[in-house]
Length: 248
Ligand code: NI
Image (tube, rainbow, N blue to C red):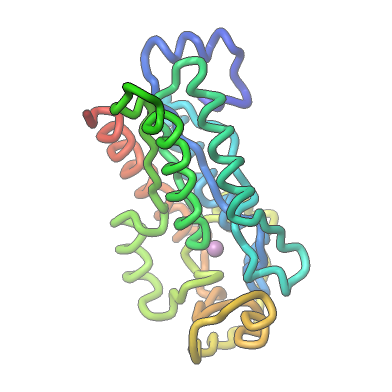
């Protein structure tokens, strides 16, 4: 069930069966010459929607804009500063907690969000931890990056090896090609340059990686590999979500 396509009565009924939901979270940022700007939000959303269809797990609206300051040198990129993203995550979770949700499983598609998601969870827990006489957080949150799921790592290694890179990767582009075949783009098969050093902020990023990719040979992507990743990752997310719900 997708929250956006449910009624409040259906959500009430779901709450009698489960107190948990999945929240896809990503980013809106350049993904090189052939990657869609929405890639990091679309990938976890596609996997989460499959999970919902296969296992009846509730999926909330995707948080599609994340922490992408270092991509702002490229047109179309949007960022929330860390404090804004923390506030968005906190209000999202506490709104749903008010009516009974207790377990929030974030399925993340953007490495740049990880630190801020962790800080947001601490802020959410602090609401209760700092109350007098309460030492038991009533809400539990978990972050799972789809790209660190064992099956995503296995398929990436088998299909792309060291040409996967770390931004505008053929794996993530494969998922969007599978889900949105009408939006498939092409590019010249230029091998991505090795990263000479880590970057600081937007201008430095663009000067180091002029076409936006980081060590990723995006042109190796295919819808077939995208399907393989979505099929495998959705199964793992169902198991990992159920284990999270069963956790004390
Ligand atoms: Ni990405």
